[in-house]
Amino acid sequence: MVYASAIHSGHVPLRFGVGACGREGMGRVKGPTRGGRFTGPWVEAICPARNRVCERALIVSTDVLRVVHDRRAGAGVVAARALAQGETVCDLGACTVMGEASVHTIDMGGGRHIDVPRVRYLNHSCAPNAYVDTRRTRLAALCAIGAGEELTLFYPATEWEMMGPFACLCGTDTCIGTVSGARHTPAEILRRHVLSDHIVALSGISGAMTG
Image 1 (cartoon, rainbow, N blue to C red):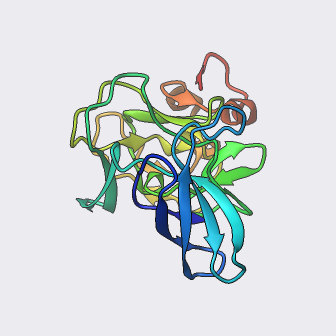
Image 2: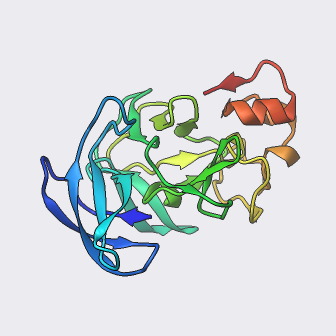
């Protein structure tokens, strides 16, 4: 996976780390394109071990997401600027699909699990302000989000089984207590949230909001 930390316009050399070989290399920022699902700036990574293009990945804009390390659970993500309801926070269509699920991946359905820089640090909340739109492969704002406000997701909206169930720390009035995936979450709770199509199919519930 390519981890890039800056946004540039045009074809500008960029230093990055390549997960496959663990070595720092160079790349060029390109995009967006119409036919290849890269709808934002993306990096073409040149592997230092092979001296050829080894991966292409979307760059998550530092203009929108900022990782912080002062949350109750440790890390979290806050909005670097105000976001409107329904706004696309970042496109997930070009992100790397992992071979298997982990505590950091998002289940997009159909056996696809993606790991996204910065987005991987979004905390769970039982009253979230963002959601993963698996139809349009994007992270979107559920409501208006102010600059500096933490972005949160309802994890069971995409995760049928949690790799690591945990006690929720959101402190909201609607807190479900233990977060252990949609399979173990009552239908009446799931219906409160925007669910991915695969969660609706697996749970068999009706009347759910989907996205």
